Every structure is written in structure tokens, then in C-alpha cells.
Image 1 (cartoon, one colour):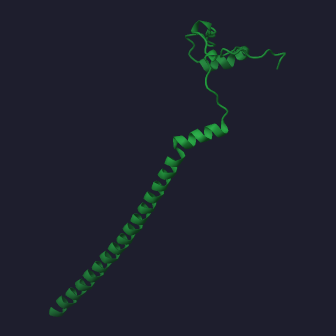
Image 2 (spheres, rainbow, N blue to C red):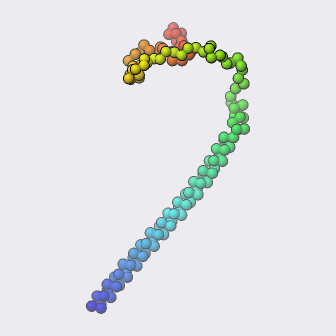
Image 3 (cartoon, rainbow, N blue to C red):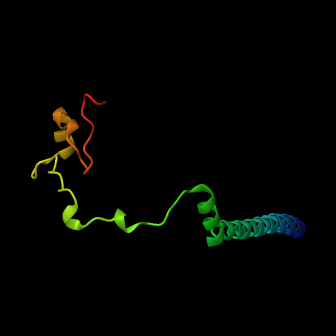
Length: 129
């Protein structure tokens, strides 16, 4: 009987030792994963800091002004470019009458509306195209 008890205790000791070894191995793996994640996070923070520095350099008003002077031929606005509100052309009539449930279907079904101007600039005549 004592021998059976000794075998059971030794078997329990081996099982406990194996379980402790398994826990130690898993904790070591988790610690390595945490270290890798911290390294990745540090690398991402450095990349973000670099991108923010580059963004602030690119977003500098002095740099943008220099690019505007170099690449755009902008001139100051002249007062003669403005017009009074009563000189503006009338708004064109709506293409789709009010109350139509499917305005896109109405426009597709009416191909003759394709030549209707939708802005204040009239389209060229068919003979000019």
C-alpha cells in the first residue's frame, strides 16, 4: 500500500513539474511577444514622428507661397472682374419637373434634354462642334 502511495506521489510530482515547465515556457513566449510588440510600437512612434515632421515642413506657409510664385501665374483680383447681382443671368429652369418620383429615370427616358444647358454658359451649337 505504501508503495502504491509512493508511486502516486512520484507521478503527481512529475505531472506538477511538467505543468510548471509548461507555464514557464508559455510565460517566456509571452514575454518575447511583449518585447517584440514594444519594439514595433517604438518603431511606429518613430515613423509617426518622422511623418509629422515632414508634414509640418510640407505644410509650411512660406514653402507653399514659394511654390505658388514658382508654378502658378496668379495675379491680384481687379475690381472690374466683379459684376453686380442684377447683371447675373437668370437661373435655368429645372430639367426634371417637380413631383417626378424617379428623376434619373426621367432624364434617361428623355434623350432630347441632353442639349439643355445646365449652367449660365450656353453650349456651342451643333454646327460649331
